[in-house]
Amino acid sequence: MPKIYKPGKVAVVLQGRHAGKKVVVIKQHDEGNKEHGFPYVIAAGIERYPLKVTRAMGAKKLARRSKIKPFIKVINYNHLFPTRYALELEGLKGVVSNDTFKEVSQREEARKAVKKLFEERYQSGKNRWFFTPLRVCIMSADTDLSSSKGGGRSAYVAAKPRARDIIQAYILPTMSAVHQVTCSAPVNIAVIKYWGKRDTRLILPTNDSLSVTLDQDHLRTVTTARADPSFNKDANGVIHDRLWLNGVEEEIKKGGRLDACLRELRRLRAEREASSPELPPLSQWSLHLASENNFPTAAGLASSASGFAALAVTVAELYGLNHMLSHSQLSMIARRGSGSACRSLFGGFVAWEMGHKADGSDSHAVPVAAREHWPDLHVLICVVNDGKKGTSSTSGMQRTVETSPLLQHRIQHVVPERMRLMNEAIQTRNFTQFTDLTTADSNNFHACCLDTAPPIFYMNDTSRAIVHVVEELNRSRREVGQEPIAAYTFDAGPNAVLYVREKDMDTVLRVVRHYFPGASFDDPFKLLCKDASDTLPSQLPPTFKKDIVPVQPKDAVRRLIHTRVGDGPRVLETGLGSESLLGDDGMPIRTK
Image 1 (spheres, rainbow, N blue to C red):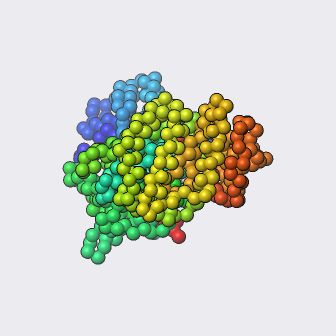
Image 2: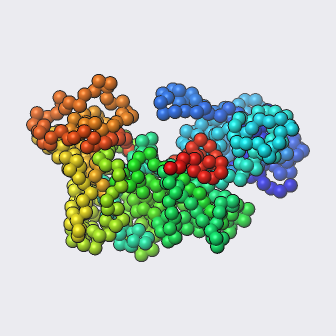
Image 3: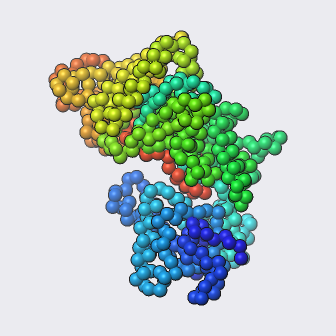
């Protein structure tokens, strides 16, 4: 009997009341023992899976629907079908042993411990594929399996006498053949800007930078990656990867940024395969990649950052590299696609250390503080223009490096001290210091753009009107002894990002809606009542100059997005499922 069952191996039960259920092996006995004269495993599985949840559900309902009913069992090798998947056992080791089954009380205690571990793993977002029931076509014994449609995902497995035959002949070959992962990655907005490269090929920056990661519930990129031997190679038999961005196929240029990321990930996968020949040769198969943003692309909202971060995380997960690479190491791969993408590998507050080595091995992202460190820091994004920028960040920053004396002063004298002070402001949650540094650095960055030859204009009249309003709000509050209310920053585009504490967001939102009427707003935190007007709030300081700017034309600001500090990348799904952007045939579900 080949030794295929090891602790952590995931299998599917083929017979009995748990037929069709996934289990994870806790301990294997290849030769059996006195009590069991056959090879067997001690396994833990899920008898009742968690139910589907939505964002609209309350905390109690979410908790109720996230409960799991596990089982622990001794299972004959002949009653299992192994899969290619494995589950990290961390807390499961030692929970269940042969002695567990001798006493009912011991068995019940072990089951409770397994239940707690499973629910913690599920709620953390890890290994979601394990907590999703297998879904197959329920068919009679004389069904022609080869002609069945739907890829085996139309109904749940039932504990029928034919369950073993259905799983062995139809479902497991299909499941094992699909090498696919879906992940998401967040947007990050820099408060100390990166602008300029000392190496354009490796994307090594001229200065350190620091950003805030935004909540993926409101802004994110989702990417699905699949490797398959059936995907076409080019005429010369060379791997031909394909990418669809928001439903439109994009060319993957040889030697380009995307190609650089994929080549490095494929190289690392090939090393794994060389050391573990039993692994499927994913590095030799072409990839199909589908990526979608839930916000405008190339409009100055850091879509390239979340996009390349999602791609790096998804392909690394597909290739089984995430347990080998730290987030900082993976950030160096994402950096090859887009510099700021490295900061989207972490949640909360993140620094990108420029490094000094020529090969870029010390230029990576590091966490500064977790999202939970400053929970009341919220963000209001004013989308002024959701079209593509006239000057891309890539070409703009190189022009600035080549022609701006002001940028050289910024690199050498301004940024190092600001990085130190910003880190201090975040650690102490000093909002006044955070505001002053954020707005000053945004203004200095755009001054460098204007100092470029020819000058680069990313901000427009509406952008400058937003600056005037926020500056006046902060000035009037300081005049009466209050802290500033908002920090503004602009990346390479006209859209404003305002950092505001949660308690002040209602005031800032009403002021913005007064001066920039007509903007669409989803109100995810339910700040506005149904009859909310666009009049200025009464609690503004008496010295606030209401005529600081005229009320702007309707739709000068097209959309308002209210979000907060968020977490890092998420693994949404392994294999086929509801989150996938690719269909059963490996082609994008949505195209334009």
